[in-house]
Image (cartoon, rainbow, N blue to C red; front, side):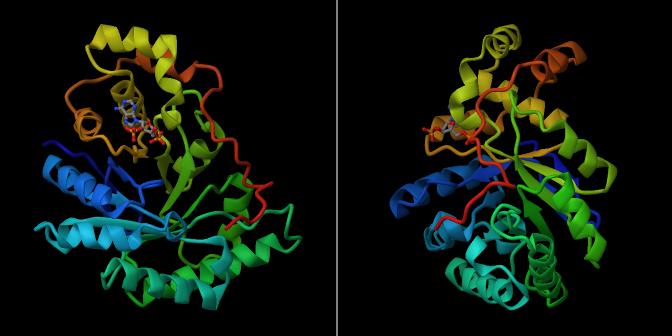
Length: 283
Ligand code: A2P
């Protein structure tokens, strides 16, 4: 199985395709999905404290023979654990739940929103200090953020001593994220696309279907390949074993410039619709 990798600015490498686990909480189902994913060649597993599935992932990984150093485990700190001290506590809690002694990547799940917090800049900066400490302590091999817009990144980078390695954002055909993608590319921050299939909603788009027929690939494979050629990391979520296989078989074809442009021009569609500046605390 071919798997592309992307190197962060600290030289840590991440597989360009991984398994998203949002909404997979059932332990037997997680065990089936992870067993199949590992045997198909997936190595990146994306979770978050808020997904409430870290223990299910630990159990599933423990039942397989893939070595820890071959896996790339990515986790996220939830909004209720912001700040220098709390983020470090939260990370240690997640490490215990996942039964690992380090994470390959740890991310801030959401920026503090300006709607709720007049001091959002200070809160994000303080949380980032905690992330840097975890990195220096060797508990996490790389650190980053999620759902940060350009202004969130600009403010964070004013006080950061270690620049974020990655920004995970919702991105898929129908939601190109051009502004933040360009900013990240210009500043050495890799982008990871969450919901790279537009939560399944984009798959009926007629342009995608047209390209899919021409290439002999599914609409989902076209979406993922588009993400790969945009240089982003894609983490599709599925609990269906056939789709798991379909989603990783995207390294044997190339979209030409015309096809990429057709996909780039798909009008807005399939977004979850959460604005990082508006997000009200939940959970
Ligand atoms: P399921 O878990 O039943 O396979 P995203 O990763 O963009 O959030 O999209 C996830 C949604 O897309 C889920 O509803 C998932 O459903 C569905 N999905 C995942 N892979 C495929 C695929 N290859 N073809 C069609 N739907 C898919």
